[in-house]
Length: 249
Image (cartoon, rainbow, N blue to C red):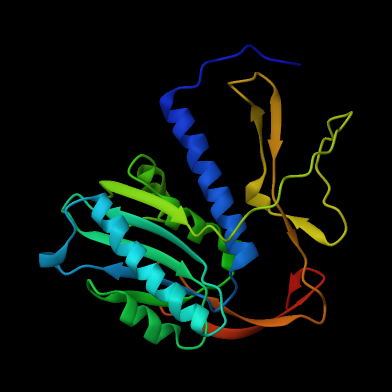
């Protein structure tokens, strides 16, 4: 039954917006990036820090246009996700996820003309990219949550999140349910991510809602190298992982 409508507070609106950013970022990470793609940080020397966000955006635009040109020469398409951040002390930096090809190390070093490329590491799938999606979408309004969860280790005064345009997300499919199942059941070949399950009453509409995410189980003959570690800035250890029926052995 429908509950009484309540006007959402600005904090609740921002929380929903942040959740949407995280969800879409994670969806794009799973669709368009893979293990061994790059996650790194573009930094500025103190004397060359930009005066504002507008200049920082322009600096990154010059960076990705250079990379795009070099990728095209090699017959590859550039894809990126980035978050420009500034700390209260004025330390500007840009976190970047980039699809890796041959010579990417040389390309990004030549493309960034304002400082150094730091904390370069290979993507790994632990948590299905959940923490990485949180890390690259955080901003000054939602940072307290990430500090409490251990995702963020520094304060943010200003942030701006964006992605390349060549990563569209598919339109969601609609299914009409005539009863409310007590527990959701995944279709064959999928499993439900435990910590993605939420139930409650939508304060804006008054209707009950349920949210959960499903992940496809890998084929029995599929083996890949993954990288385990902590975000951000740690060295990842490499190991072979074989998946059979959704269970890691």
